Length: 212
Image (cartoon, rainbow, N blue to C red; front, side, top):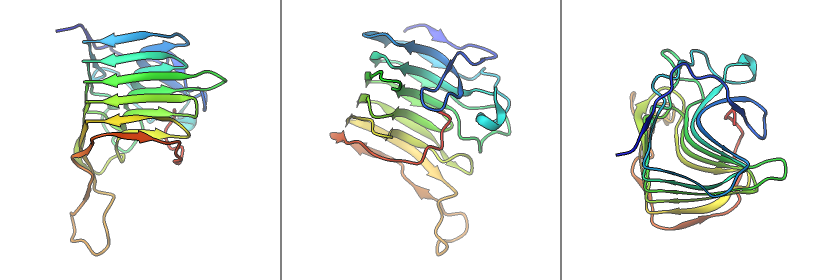
């Protein structure tokens, strides 16, 4: 078993390449190539963030486990867990396991393989921006189950990012907010147990509702 990284009272140590918003990240790989993160447990349980992140709350940072920022490499055989904000903040759109992002003329190319990503608040894996490529294979991404908090995404490719999604298992992405009027009270839409045997992701679009 590898080392456990569980920092306390996290503070901003980097910024988003697109919004400039503050981010508190356990591991930042910034502007370098060929960096491998392997066999670690990355735990955000003691992050200490006590307000919703975002421009209106600057300098409150958003929470991330791993951030490849105009960088390349591999995340392999690791557990990324507990990327959740403090008590009473379940509705905040923050708390992501892995972020891969490009900007300012830089590029990111990251392989994300054989990891467990769970107990996050917003996204499991996020790949954003046009110069970003992510190869996500054989990961297990587990959401919080039925929740009235922030709507969760297991694996997100957005704003022009490309890559491969192959043999991942994504479960427990269930939002009580996604309810048809015709459904009985208490029913919820479930995107649980989505598997992608092999899919090359094209450039896509999405609303920018995350601080990154």
